[in-house]
Image (cartoon, rainbow over all chains, first blue to last red; front, side):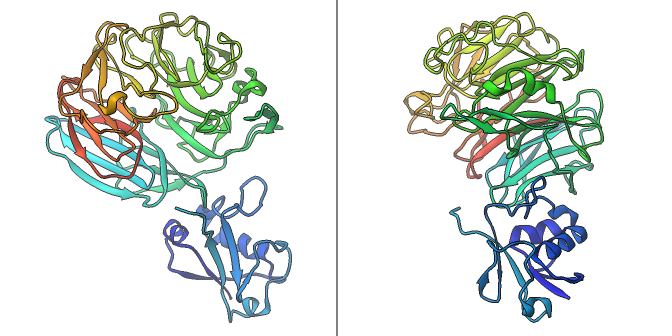
Length: 98
Length: 371
């Protein structure tokens, strides 16, 4: 199972706890994880990726294993520790004032 | 006994203020959607238990929430606002062409005749309609054909912030866009034309009487007199007696004719309210005195309403959607400030009281009068 940690506002919106688990078929990429997340929680559509372009919203960041994956290709494989469920994928609201 | 429910949108959530018809004792609930910007929250007049919320942040984008039980519970409906066809471009601040991009929903206007129909005014400016209570949205693209390539954003963005529906003829719609102007449709939004003849923007436009480019801040109509429209423009308070064909100035003896909201009394179609603001570069009341101005003559002759409002050191603003009236007799008038106060006057403006004083900056105020 893939572990995903959502930021506060999206946990409230999806009515879930801090961490959720998702079944994601191989190959496990960022795009595949987000597809599975939005399929399980449709209210999150548009809150992480632009609904029309599919691009990451500017103030969203993706962290895992101490790395910033925000600028990686969404089709790149996720780190092995995320794929194995050892480490979560962190979806983070960027520090941008406010 | 009737109940009054004030729906308040703020920078950090929504609040609901409730009172009986005396409008003296208020119950405050919220924040709902805490931490999110609530540009607008408005109920249907056909089914007052149906309430729509525009909820957004820069971080997580746009959501639309709907309640079918008067705000007790909420569920997200569609947030998919896709422009019809190739969106094209409009003018940018520097005069260059800029692609149309969806940013947020500024206003949600439920139909006065059908609880399932609701309109959404968005930034970048366009009008959307839903026929199923917000489950699906489709653009009415003819509006952007009304010289949309000439529209350009005002300081607050290129937002469609005002939608008026003629209650006697729901096919007749008016929209207002900053900084494009006012527009009218007589066929339910299938075709549109600018409704700006008579507007003059001497300081903002190279051609002060241009058809496109006026920074309209809000428009208002009384349901018994839908051919008469009132407008608070960037500068100037204006009036049209012929369904928006021609406008003339009614600023009269106001201390400043800059401002944002304009509303009409519930039972007196010639009684209107504005909140003068010092200038476009100083968004606070003249002399630091918060005054609502009322005209009982449809404009030109104005009286200051000050009883209960701060008359010294007050430097708040009242935004375009942050003023409303109830349907009781005497008519209640309400407004919210960027300082987080929501004021009520239960007697048509003669006396004012702050219901709450420390909310986040108020973006919108709507009022429901419930039997």
